[in-house]
Amino acid sequence: MQINKITRILFVSFSLGMASFALWANSTTLSDSNPLPDPEKSAPSGLLNQIPRLIDATPTLLPEQSSDAIVLATEQTENNSWADQKQKTVREWADRTALKIDNWFGQPHPDQPAKASLRVILDNSWDKYEDYEIKPRIRGKIKLPTMERKLSLVFGDDSLDNELDSNVAITNENLSNPDNHGLDTKRSREENTSFALRWSEFSERLPFETDLDLGLRSGDDLYARAKVSKQWTMDNDYFFYAEQIYRYGIQSENYLRTNLELTHARPNQAFLSNQFSLTYADEQDDDLKWDNYLFRQHQFFKDNRFSYGIYSGGYLNDNDLRLNRWGPYLSWRQPFLREWFFVQTDVNYLNDHRDNRSHYPGASVRLEALF
Image (cartoon, rainbow, N blue to C red):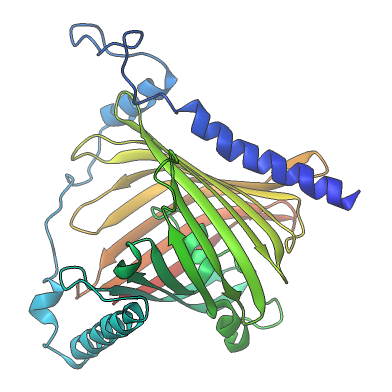
């Protein structure tokens, strides 16, 4: 019975991701039955087109969109201070290491050297009930161009790869330790010891992007992970993105996540977006967990993000679908002093029906260094 239940849940979640592929598969194809739009015709109608117009018509005191930089480029500051020099040292060490590893697989091309990227993150969170928690996170990638630019090594907290690249909020699907608030060094060490060989774009015949990982999680969890994703350009400045992730680990067993994003974005204007995720995992208590962010996002200078909207989330157990948490949230992200160092602050006002908690304030701060 348990196997049948898991199979049914996996099928439903996977079908949701695959159905989204089919739903918008022809959105960018023009044919005789779908001719180019006539500019003399009236503006398109419908709810999806009316919502952005209503938002654009609302008076605002916010500044205009801008891509002007407020910090100097890394090349201009890399020798200025001790921190700049350390950042340069780590960056160059990572690239040298990438080149050495690439040499194992063949003769590197001088015009396409191996490159490494590294994110070092310190997440700080607080709310009225859970108190204060610190989570250090690391994620790195080494591209190996000698393997036809399809193989790479990835390491660190693999849960970061389960999020959308454009993820609007500070999130972490790794469970907190209720008995050890603050900094849990043992758990942090386990969460940041993932290591895998990634094979990307292994077939040009497939209509979507693909990643296939084989590696270790938490030191002893041998796993395989597959990810397929695709973005469609739709009419009237809409974009739809979908990705499906499946992982099986010897210890963690089944993990399945669907990420969907619908965005309305016009050039040089703030955009409106909705990000939805659906997660099944043998390690979680609920059959399915879902999270949804509906938000508007501005950029006042280069690499800045100012977002505000409504979060909602819940779970599904034995055909019982529940809205567990909802409320407003606000997020601000920007480079701070240097092009390679970012600060992000999120504040929210959410409730929790399951724990019988009315709306209460919460906040998160992320410090992130890029190498």
